[in-house]
Image (cartoon, rainbow, N blue to C red; front, side, top):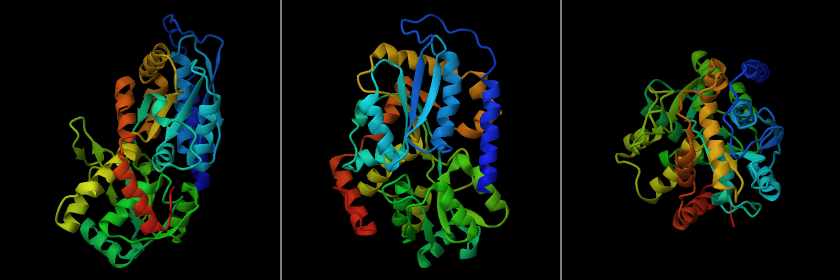
Length: 368
């Protein structure tokens, strides 16, 4: 299935690239003109990753809408849950609009957990695009799962499943915390890429996993249709009024908060909810972002914001192929993107301390 996925993704990007050849009207003249310039987009994950596909998609559109229609070159710098690439971005990028970066959940988590390897001043970056992605947890049916979501959770509590993933301080963190809050004491096998853990799930080596809800159609639904897996819960999606509702991609699947209340007889509250919500802000609402480096002048940030708003209306980002990448989730630019960015950095010292203690007691990980 992984080789088939690579072929599908290659075809997807090829189709989008073909759309990118459509001639668009030249953007209006700007004080910041990138004509003849080469812009570098640093993506701190491996080629073929979700962040790379997302970044390439926006690069194709921004080449058409940034003033002067510059060339955007992708540079993948993998390592450390995005730390290596974003450290390099912080070190090398000048505030002239010629270097941008893709950041994701790992970038936030390593900063929040005060990883010693982090050298980047995350709050000083200038976001101009935020793409939310829902979160879906699912398990293998050979655990005896049925159609009742609450009974399925009770079975997972009574018989702890095996989870395969990257690790508790990676993008797996919100899912692992959610499992624990529900009372599921899964056994973890870590150090795996998403592709490796999914392949292990398909082979039956692991029986509990999570994924972006945007991966539902291509990766997870076939497993459900074949009777291999059952959705357990989603993280839901936050509306403008602040209410967390069911994920628009999977409206028939209950949210974590719904199941927590049914299992425990009361809503999640207190510092546990505050920490969970802070992780939700990062993992769901701020799943993928494009940023400019610290010190970038407002006029350059505004140019990127306007170009991104225009890019969202192009054939490239309105295509059926692009919808497979972005799914049904609304994209945020400018002030809205910045608000989500700040929400991802909202965890207080007390909440960070609680999370570090949870990592120590639950996963024997000490974060200094």
